Length: 330
Image 1: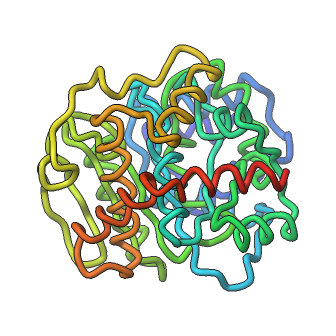
Image 2: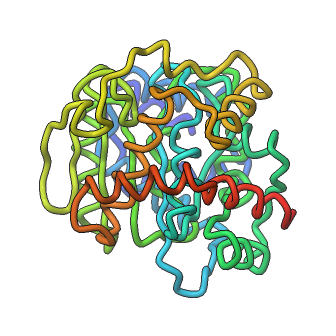
């Protein structure tokens, strides 16, 4: 690691092969905590290159516990996190709306490193038991349209740096990696990013895959469709800027997206919305993200029809039924 750190301190960048090697060595416990922290800190001080990100992704995928979902065409809805906004769990809620609308979901998530409650925190609070057993996960998808993949039990390198990331409490390049290393290799992806530079990097990387994707970024800094301002939406077909009115029929204020001060509070907000008791603003944000996910699968002719399907999923109770069914299988 000393040679790698010296190279980085001289403002040089890693090749794809070097980046892969470092992350594999991290997962094998070959470096101490101080060395790993120093390594992570370098990428807080400069932008990561595409080659470096590809190398890190190569390492995680090579080491990953893969999940075979028997050819099911699943979608993942995930944000990079690290936007510092403390919103409620929008992408995870959107997953249940999408599942209730009939689309299979393999949600990849982790504990919050830069937020009060990540996807794994809220799922754990709701009674979900993390597992990398393919039989269990397949049954969940078949019976409820959704399963949850807790990143550390599929990715040794993520487990190795979990405590360091939590102690740092700020965005690191691991935030960028999460959406790219879903062990189920989803056919469809909705990825939220915290800035336009990351949007460009993700566009480049996802264009090289077989995935149908949508990359979203709210221009005021959210890694999801926040409806607090305009958003840039990038798909396989191109990109455009969309207004809150186009996406969610209304504009909302940042205070409407408050996510709570504890994991317990976050779970209560989550259930409140899924039970149909959310505010108009909360519902609109969830509908917009779920609709964009459904639309990117190609199952709906227009975004507006996908939005209608999202509304129906929540209001009919199908989204809540997906959650209740999933928890009953634990």
